[in-house]
Image 1 (cartoon, rainbow, N blue to C red):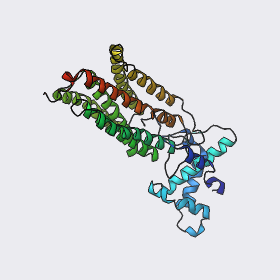
Image 2: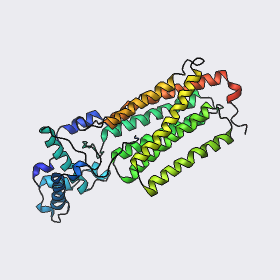
Image 3: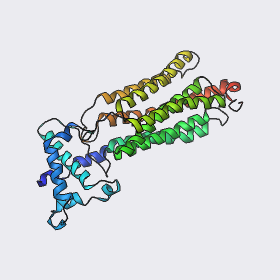
Image 4: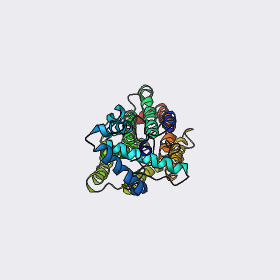
Amino acid sequence: MTPSRLQRPSSRIMLGLAMGLLLTLGASMVLASSGDLQPEYINCVNECDNDICKVSDLSTLTREQLATRDLSPSLRFTHWSCLDNCRYLCMQSITDNALQINEHVHQYHGKWPFYRLFGMQEPASVFFSLLNGYMHYRAWPKLKKLIPEKYYMRKFYLGYAIVGMNTWLWSAVYHSRDWSSTEKLDYFSAGAAITYGLYYTVIRITRMVSVHKQILWGIVCLIPLLAHISYLTFVRFDYGYNMAATGTVGAIHNMWWLGWSIANWKSRPYAWEPTVSAALITAAMCLEILDFAPLWGVLDAHSLWHCATIPLVPIWYRFLLQDTEFEVRNMKGVLHQAHQD
């Protein structure tokens, strides 16, 4: 293998550090991509693996080859192997050459060629995921402070913050290292969050103050979620089906709030906010359609989608708090009966 094939990425790493990173919630991916099938890539990886990773006499290796084999602490911490490193370096070398001569940039193993940072495969997506989670974290003390303890939706809104933090945590983990286990945790957490959103939405809009009815409705939501997760785990991990299923639940959730907005637009000055929020989230998701090679090796459509959702999280919590204030102020006799059953 020629030394140039194993050169580390150039100044774009520093640009990647400056730009940052981050759903999840999941773009469809394939197990084999066009880059994986390139003879140049296959030969590069095989040469690197045979000439560096599988060599027993380390004295025969150059300093550059030793750097490829002896991984940095951050790569060891994130469980990169020598073969993983070979794949990454070959991918980046081929991509750099393609950019220099204006050739097509390929995907490798279902992903665009991102510059890694401290072992993170998609640093921008990781960063934006953490910021989304931080928005939920910031909302937690506000919810506890501003929502009366006797208001029946208090526990559900606090639960929504916890679910949100969990979802974006696993999104960050998955975009750090793409393994089957982290992928499932990301996708299943996102599915659970979408289902939970529908769960508390129906409770709020129908004013389901009866604990008995809340439990029954929870079971109705939980059974299909468990069936969904079981199918993806034990039968087939179908990306298209997963997106269709979660998209359907999300659309039903949005339709509930759209109907509520229409029914209350005259009586509540903030009634337009759920519909606008749903429209903005849908618009942000449309970024997924614009699948393109990452800009500067850092920002792709998926990471920009996660970036776009960051300011939408506090907007939604603002609506929930406005609605809580209105409900508590105007309908106390109805809404504080959560313990009647």
